[in-house]
Image (cartoon, rainbow, N blue to C red):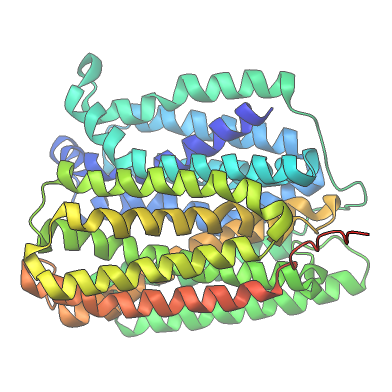
Length: 463
């Protein structure tokens, strides 16, 4: 069962970044414009982001196994359609269906782990979940480049989508056999109005954040964001009214009265924001600032991932006894690593070597590994099984909205110092060093928010 849901998670995470290194080849082959190329990437991310809350609730209503398999079916079918796409429009449409399938599939993974495991076994399962997510996010661009360059069977970029088909079919077949069904037995009919308000609000916020920079932030972007916020406020009132009438709302508002859930959800939102901000800036710093080739820059991501995996495994053993102290230690360790990184970049500038970066990068990865799995576990561990899908959908939504906000902050913070995206050398290094204090400050905010999580388990007294 664990293998089945983790393969589903791996496919969804890979496809968020798998297409990046194949975009130039896709453009040359399909004749896509710059806007079309952008939406080849954005269609997946937006469909995923706006559908997670609804996907989580569908699992509560109709069964997490059934919903996971439905989402995997849609994701696999859309992957085949991506392979068969004849032009930019059909590829973008298929990518949107892929994202929608992933949005239905992903919340069931955390919810299934939550209702299946308990205690230390649950911590280990969440640790593996975090490990797979880390591997997928780094392996995506690397695998996309290898498959595109290999030109398997003359398919060129199409092979990056075709590999999902056998994986998806195997996941569905094994899922039918090994997954156990779980659901909210007290759920009523689906909240269609809530689903519409949720999707509309998130779309009106996410689209301007994705496209506003390319259009130099015209008036309509701010109007759309304000309308999206109004839709989400209306969603809250609608959910309260539906709850009072004894209906089955899209979001279980009582979850937010749970201190660990509210604090952990906010911490995850901030952490996602920091990820969106730091990793894009770090990529530009290594390639445009230090002049490293993409393959050389990938070594930095590899070191970070290995250290993050080590941190996740260490966290599995630590969280059972130390509870919130484990992710809090990770946040402080990551902040310390970035402070050292800032000192090195400010001192050596464009002469900073990859060897000198190794220790801060490893320390940063270890810190992030200590945060990921424990934060997930401690945030939703005390949520009742009947609302696990809703909690999982909200948690994943916080992650993806945070990343979108982080990308926006990249334009506001990084490009304030680096005025052009084509700058090189010392200008990019200066922009990177100016960005790091914001990331460090965000990690300290994350550390403070974790005080809402459960305290350390006291040791038994000795008599």
